[in-house]
Amino acid sequence: MSLSFASSIAVQSRARALVPLCVGAGAYLFFLYLGDTLLQDSDSFWQIKIGQWILDHRAMPTTDFYSFTRAGAPWISTSWLSQMAFAFSHAQWGWAGPVILTAVAVALAVAIFVHLLETQIEAPRAVLFAMLALLLSVHHVLARPHILALPAMVAWVGLLMASADRRSAPSWHLLPLMALWANLHGGFVLGLALIGPISLEAVEHAEKGRRLALFMRWVLFGIGALIASCCTPYGWRTLLGAANILSLGELLSLIFEWMPANFATFTSFEGALLGLIAFGYYRGLVLSAPRIFLILFLTWSALTHVRSIEAFAFLVPLVLAKPLGEMFPRAAPDAAGADRRPARYVTVAGALMIVAAGWTSTSLYMGHHRFTFTMTQTPVAAVDVLEQRKAQRIFNAYQFGGYLISRDIPVFVDGRAELYGEKFVMDFFKATEGKQPERLPRLLDEYRIDATLLVADAPGPQILDQLKGWKRIYSDDIAVIHVRTGAQAGGAPEAETPKDAFK
Image (tube, rainbow, N blue to C red; front, side):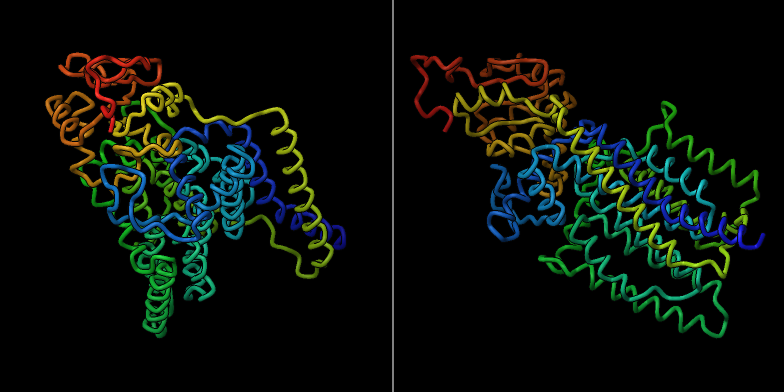
């Protein structure tokens, strides 16, 4: 009977070891199948373009060379490593490359997430949390650097919380993880900010005689993490570059991913918040002050900027893992005498089979499906017209900037809002969205604009239709082109049009 019980425990142990891999594989296949939905943000175009420039020149950009409004202005890329990865994958496999890379990053983040939760709570609950995290994050899963940094964020915070749960300081071996995160995406500042409250959780529950020593070890670790975050080609300027986006003020309320959460209609995030409150009341969940602060901070961040909802989705469960584990203890611990070596072999074999199945599924799916970027972000026909007319200074819509950069056309504005600054982009939005239409002719004259490329259903084209000196020459469901009166139309020269009208 005892041998049968030990065998059962060993089987359960092997199964638990494969759970994170199975959940990660499921997430990978899910986002691979929905791959076209990952290609909906024109920022992906300029991210790939910059990554390719880095690969070609073996150097890092320090100034802007993609716009004509900020040409030569200081600018650094805080996501250079992700951009290189996207550029390389795109060069090898087209849009399938960034899709696969993004799906792999999500799968890795989910696998790490489930593995960390499993140390405290039962596997089914860990899987449920993973599914909820994906549901909350799906709106922001795009082929962009923040997703490639997602595994680093989950691992960093999860391992820091594990150290706090043990009432010890984190290992110095975690510092390379911070350096990796800092080279992947500017969101690493969140990891630095969370060191403080997590350290207080460790210190609060430590023995009184060792609290000061433990606190000092966390302080030294925090200093080490700050230094590690500067281990990038830009050094300490990485910190400034990552923080610049937060100084855009009013502009953040106009960029979708930086907008505050909107509860005008019911959303999964609203449901998660209500569920968290209800669970706390129903079960009488008692948390320490540092854990309460962490949850409030992550909730505030998600309410302030919708792009922070995935941090809320993945990090709040890690903060709650130990209290939930104490509330719902495991059914049975591992058998002390169970043989571990066969279990390891079975786990490795299972992992290899999962990887092989994922690769086979990818090959079969790519064989009959071609990933394409969303048409609303790619005004192909309109840009072809502008190239035929040899327009040099194009007043483009914000969402068309990335595509123009991919076509090697200097832009008026693009998704690098921190480069252009709050006033510049706010003036642009107010002029093109009809809030202050009198600004539009002033901008067109100030920057000596030859042609405009604006979104078809936006107020801007209607304003230009009534503006003296401008003429609509092209429109489709995606974009509208206006040129100054007297410029060439349809490729046929007009008598009074100078040859250098667009120079």
